[in-house]
Image 1 (tube, rainbow, N blue to C red):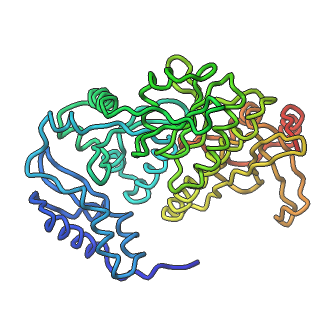
Image 2: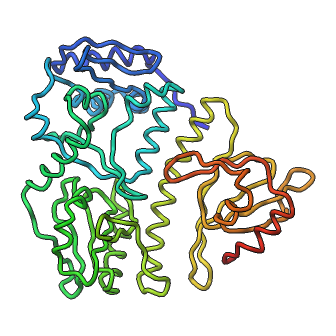
Length: 414
């Protein structure tokens, strides 16, 4: 394993960050909170907390000519005026931003890694947000000329307002921006692409009236594979659904993908959706969904492994695997191995592997079942971690009778 050679101490980096803020006009007091590895800027009601962990890692990973750019990229938007903005300033600038819920979960775990078990400190850097459905949530931000600055709990307190008040105002600010017509890349198909490319295309899913006005067959179905692209079709239009699935595959190749889950308008909100199994677009949409799950679990696995290592724990963080049968069925699977305490992803299938007397797994006996059946038969061995997407801490190993019962009840394709 490659070990990064550190040339700057964390306290020296805190001084460099403080000097940069001062040079940009920050006049409030700046204090380095070493225990939480952050800068505390200001005092009283107008205080900001700037976590240094990610910025320090990026600074160390770059060559000397790039280090100054790292400081600018990480800290220029953290500079504040001597006084908090007026209510009018806040109301004019605030906008919502839609993200996949896995992002919020990973950010909180990363904060736990950097700040330890201090729940108060973690709450201070966790963005307030509104859950939209199983896969999406929205937070608040200031849309600045060259970047987007998130609004954390410290700023809400300083503004003297609530998240709900600002959220309603943010949606109106987004609605009042210049309106453009959705694009129709292929005029023979009633499938559309959002036109803005300003980083808020996915967030405009909150402006539901714009989607209900489109000439699609049936209820609108959307895919937002990046923050700059939303694809729209009707749930009764196979050709259009195939088109957006194909465009979604291409969009996922762009930098910084969002989520490729399909969502259908259900009257009160967007809900994750797939057509019936025999639909022409089912397989492509299912693969896009699995790509999003796999990406989210991979990000989560990386953070959890770092957190477990930092805390001296040896739990195994399981991997989500996807399979496609000769008949075209697609399903996910993970392995629960005897004697291995693990954090497993929530999958369609669980393979229970009983180790050989020497502890090896080659040729070992395996039982397979669905996740739902496992939860019914051995709930005492499984504990949800509360992450998004969900993981389960598994302890011990089922009895033979339980394994046989699960294998007989939960059949999945091989």
